[in-house]
Image (cartoon, rainbow, N blue to C red):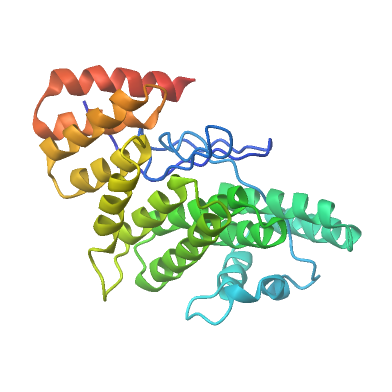
Length: 293
C-alpha cells in the first residue's frame, strides 16, 4: 500500500467549490464547531474564492491590500509574472474578470463574490500564492475567522507546493498572518492555533525552531479532548519517523472523534511506517472511502 504525501484541504463556508484531488490525508484542519470551514480531509477538495482587482491595470491589484507589499517576493510581482505566462484564452478570461469588477465598482457584495471567484480561478491554474492573495483581500473585507482560515490554508498549500526559499518564506509569512487573524477573531476555536503551529512546523522560525512543538504541547494541555491537536502532533511524529508515537496520538484522536475523515488517513500512514501493513490497510480503507464521498 502506498500513501502519498499530503498537503491540505479547505472546505469553505461558501458554495462555489473547486474540486482539487490530492493526497489521502491533509496537513491542515479548520473546524469551527463542525460548522465553518473544516480543514481536515486529504486535499479532496479545496474550494476557493476568486475575483479581480478594482483597478483596470492588473499590476495595481496589490493596492487593495497594502499588507501584501513590502516583501522580497510580493503579490504584485507574482501576479505580473503569472499574468505574463497566461495563454490567449486565459488572458481573455482575466480581462472578463476585470470588466466585471469595474461594473461592480462601489458594490462590495459583488466585488467580494468576484474576488472569491478569481481566487478559485488562479488556484485551479496552480497559482496558489496568487489565489492566496485574493483570498486575503476577501478576508480583509469580510473580517471573519472563516475567511482568514481560507486565506491561511491557501497560502499553506502554496508553501507545501514550493521548493523556492523566497516564495516559501513569503507564503509562510502570509499564512501566519492569516491564522493569527483568525485566532484573534475566534479565540475559542482551537483549530486556528493548531493550523498556525503547523505552518511553523513546516517553516520553523530561525530564532525558535521548536515553536510548533511547544505550541502544540501547550494546546494538548489546555484542550485534551481536541482531535485536531492530536492529529497535528501525529503529523509531526510522522514527519520525524516516530511511528509509535504517531500511532499513539492518532489513535487518541480516533477515539475522540470517528467522524474526522483525516484521522484514518494519517493512521494508515503511521501504521505503514511502523511496518504493520494489516492495520495500515484497515485504515486506508476508511481513508479511501472518505475520499470517494
